Length: 492
Image (cartoon, rainbow, N blue to C red):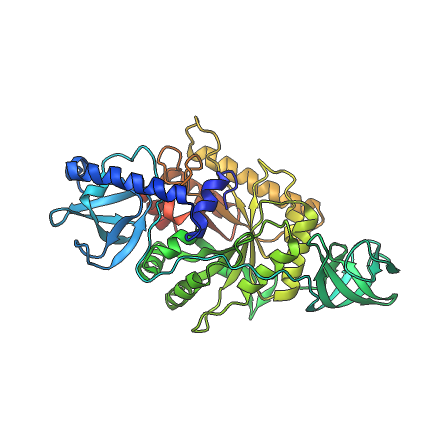
């Protein structure tokens, strides 16, 4: 999801269990430093002098928030270093009563809080009781063929080949608009998908980029009378696998509901690690569904091997928890490779494999930095487009509500115009994707360049006025108290 953020820091935080020894050493050193500061009472003194309902900041990574003011009380979450929290009162000696997120109260050691942010924010590396570390889980290499039952038409004059690859002998030529019956798909040596198709001219392998599957319009498709995109409507939040592994998820989901959040995007798969976080879905889906919150499983495909990313995405979409829950949709974060052919073939094959009733949301780069992003290719298969409208792009600029409104308006209007210019009569719905992180900090928890609550209100207002189906924010664990207040107060 980074868009404009540093990829190294984002990737390090995403996976949870995939760590570097040198970073562990750094965290250990930081812990030692903060432990020394705690012993000297400097941080506790700063917090003790803060007035109730003022902001204070975690001074160390993995800051433990507990349900009661003692070290054996149930753990609610572990906060990033530099996270702001609302000081409610001093509790028993050594503990501060605080508010985190939108509505959750807890207790944190006073020694880990200060009246100003630390010089360097850090996530840290810690474990949550009873939660296993994430592990890579790549599917074995397999070029197929795999089953696929679909009808399609060619979109350009093309050829059927003896096997999946342009180096195979051609068997028959096809005009544009030729009807196809597809029974299989496979990958060529470069990871591009091909269809085994029957046409009037014969049967053979067709490059998937030369066909359009016969599927209902993804912009208007209904499931039992309800728009397929309904699970992505309203207010949403995104989080990487750090949060899923470092929080009491019953409390987290209750906090989302109290803030009026209707859906959550949880990252569970990345191309180079595979579907590494089924445990996160096992923990999150039952509690979210019990409270009426939709969970959209977020995958990060690099599209360097389209066929492999298709198989990974299908694996996530077909996953069921031991209790039978499954994700309410799939979000794809397509930002590494954005050529139209790769995006189109990936989306079409996912749609063909998952069917028209599966919600597909695509997190897209905004047109200010990527005017040539293939929005039309996305509209061919996905139901919702979520442009990453991260407006804090200038380090030495103070942003106003007017800046936010102008940025979001230009982004959304430009994207819709791009889809219409490509001949799409009904552009797919947009869920505006806003910013709750500091893109100039590796861990995103800095306070100097994280949008204000007033900016979040402006973003929500602009998205609503533009007719977006909702607005969501990246990311939960770096959201500030003023941002949570703004999100909670806004009625969608």
